Image (cartoon, rainbow, N blue to C red; front, top):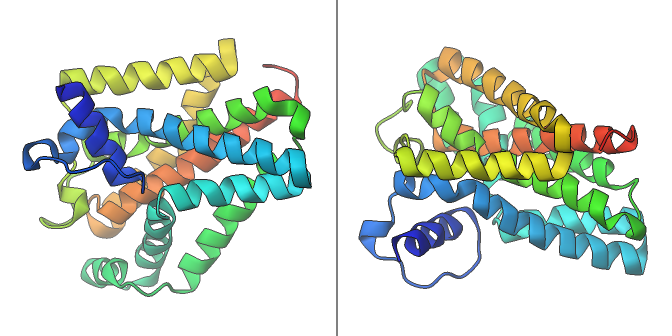
Length: 253
């Protein structure tokens, strides 16, 4: 029952999927963190189903657009919101306090608009070359991106201190041994299933945006915020999906 409660808490936090009432004791993000990559698999399943339906009925372009939008809708745009606020905050403020203030502002600035537009456009472009007969290929791209992307907040929370004592960034700490093992196994299985012997390439691709974001966050605001954790998901998802698509196009997987 504890396993189910942890997964429900993670699913309820990261998506708009109705999970019913969750007891306060099971609401800990640290406890639920190990299930984040599994939630990525759920999001990938939704995105894949919508991609297949859209591609089969309206063509590859419509399928790609609808798939990306489905992932945004099912997650309530939580990661896109984090990406926009992170772009505005890290590059739009003169000092640490001002950057954190900008990141808390619900309004989206120029950097944020460009970040969201670029993210959605590239994710769509990655899927667009694949038609309805490429279900296995599209599935691998979406599963790799969404599963490995949801591991990014766990790494960022482990290597960065909270930038402030309140907010979502302070709620996610290092998962225990069980949560860490679950997340690691989920990521490893997804990488192997999607890329075979090239699985380390996907893991390495995931490490690039996480490392870059960690360095930028530490220098600009002194640690992690909820927005930065969300940006980690978005950037890692995008990078891994693009690399997976490249491996497929080259006939390597």
